[in-house]
Structures are given as structure tokens and as C-alpha cells.
Image (cartoon, rainbow, N blue to C red; front, side, top):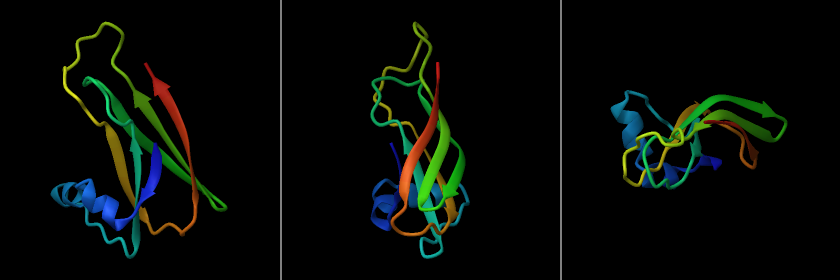
Length: 105
């Protein structure tokens, strides 16, 4: 799914620490965090990527790609939670968030 995260979600998912480790400062007073998640997957080999954001009126379109391991390909046998999160200038409250995601195989 896609969405704009509030401060509790950013902290609860550990994204504040992940951004800090990557040297990306996050100030949710003036910035927003947009998340694209593939949810729980049974194996490795999945990937999520945000390639663009389009704000049109009161709708935010999250553009990106989702990739699954090729059929029959070797994949790590572990539960994974593939996601991509980006920091943006502060987005207005009450936006409708829609996905424009392309699935790659």
C-alpha cells in the first residue's frame, strides 16, 4: 500500500533511525514521509521503489515499481517486508493518496 505517515508511524517503523543512519534529516514539522510497502512476503527477492510523486489538487499519486522474484529463481527463504520511503516537503493534510505502481516480473 501507499500512504503518508504521521510521526508515530515513522517512529514505530523505525524510519526515523533509518533516515538518520542514511544521513537524511527528517523534520516532520516541515516535511512528510511517503511510504510504498509490499507488505509481508514469504521470501526475499521482492523490491519496492518510488519513482515519482504527482500532486494534483487534493490527490497525491505515488508512482513506482514493484518487483517479485522470477518464477523458479532462487530466493532467500525468510519473511521480508519490502518497502520504499521518501522524504518530501510538507504535504497538505487530508490528501487522497493513490498508487500508480507498475509491477515488474
